[in-house]
Length: 448
Image 1 (cartoon, rainbow, N blue to C red):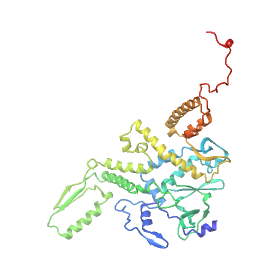
Image 2 (image 1 turned 120 degrees about the vertical axis):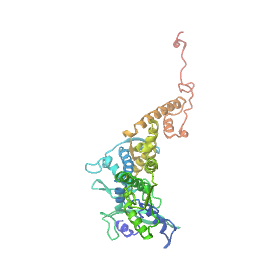
Image 3 (image 1 turned 180 degrees about the horizontal axis):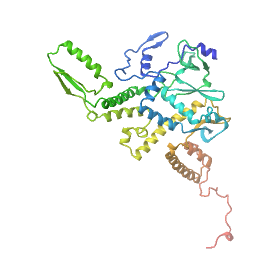
Image 4 (image 1 turned 90 degrees about the horizontal axis):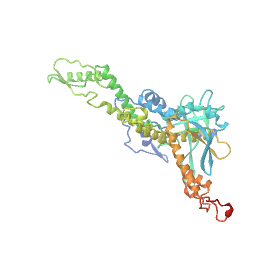
């Protein structure tokens, strides 16, 4: 199989991590050897803002390590995501039952020497956030991370009696040190030898995931520019923008020279607000706005909120200005519930299913699952769960008192499927059929 993977390495799945990659893929559509382009698909993220390079290194250095909003969003996701532990979840009648642990879970509890479950999960979510994918394999009984941008997925055409329908995954190839056209892979893996965690599917790829940073690259670049703008405002004397009119006697050549020199020393965020010295005949007019006039805080806050929305983290959880402006205890509780239910639980489910490739369940009906009962962030949820269980207990009691079989009552309440109920046919309070008890004799009756 390894030789087959090597022979098919000419069909690696396209790595799409930025807006540029999407535009290139759409403009280079190939079908049956013929090239087709949609035409007009342009990447417009240009101009004076800093462009983030289209690889893991670029996302890590230009977004995660140099943008406070991105770092805060990723940190919140990482801290909560890494707080769970893994357990087996029993399956009874096709429905999940209780959680339990066995020695087979040791690779997840100590994934490598000195490592913990939290270390493993922190790395998984960090790779998924930056690259859209996290790859893991087992080497010498330890879980080993495969750097996402050094991995390629090998595909093979999926043939049917009607022709080729898509591609199927036949393995992974790993290039230690990076992927180049001339290098041979340093390792080859079969599909069941790699745990692939890709929580956000890439719409232009079959198996790869997409980073949540990709749709907000423009917001990240703008946020960094606004940070530079603020710094230069204070570094250069907090001087507003100017319009300079020169005397009509100035020749066109002199005007062009002045314009070139002015733009070279005052244009762009790095040169913003520098004091301007002019000679005779120049008329200077202030046209720029200060931070208050252009509502700088609100403009920047909107960008921060869009970044947090892409991360699936409510702004009040991260501590962003727009979230704190409307923060109350009730709002925070609702935001926490949305973050837990809408972001964290799906990520935990995906991680458990991905790691199940490397950690087979014990004999019997069970699956790898996560245990969030000890996560401090979800303590309020434990109170809500207790209230739900109290309501369920009351429902179970009422149904049993009404004559339904206890086993079917529990299954029906647990699965929320009332068709599972079966009645005993007994309706009296004591649930005894008529004639099954001996009537009391007069001597046994109690005197009034």
